[in-house]
Length: 137
Image 1 (cartoon, rainbow, N blue to C red):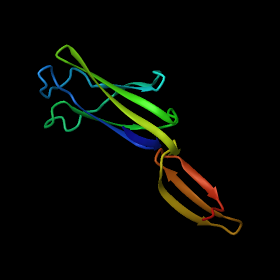
Image 2: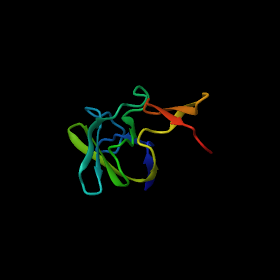
Image 3: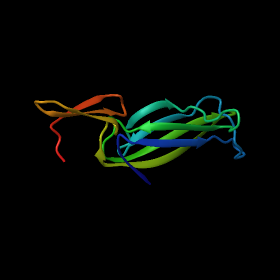
Image 4: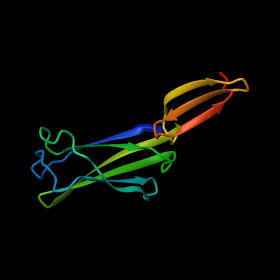
């Protein structure tokens, strides 16, 4: 089982196959539903985009960002698709452990010294800016 913190991205990759276990293109994009440990859907109806559609038949990938919708605990990822009228699915499990930030990691920092105080301005992965006054090591 994979473990992640808030703000991390969970990669979900699916190779769609037909009943003969051969790679096949589904009739529609696979859909993702994420359930928490009590069986409640946290996110649903997320559609997966294809990966290199002309050369890789039936391969789809989605980067699920662990936002404030998630808390520490266990989760199930349920992926469902249809090939030639046959519904198929796949289940993955992951755990969210303590730590991290729902806004993601910093992707940029700027030190801004002023006469009254020192500031650090940081840009997070979700695009928000955060100001920290008089930071200490």
